[in-house]
Image (tube, rainbow, N blue to C red; front, top):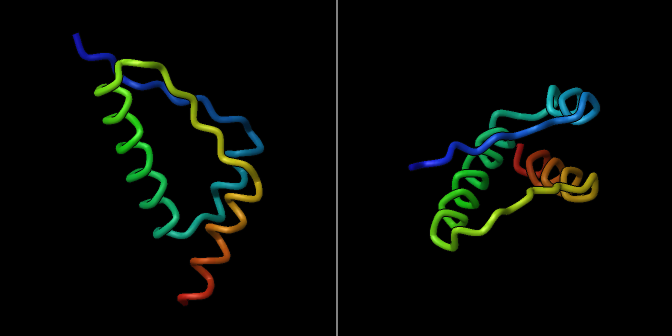
Length: 66
């Protein structure tokens, strides 16, 4: 049986996500799909935690290209 991933987000994280660019949203989706595929290969539970520093670095990369 295939288990569907469940994501829980805090209100603060959702508020921060409202400012994400389409490229940042796409990167998040791609990263999440890769992690789920890896989890299914390893059959071990994973937990995704993105720190504010990682979010800021991602944002900085996106603003440099635009």
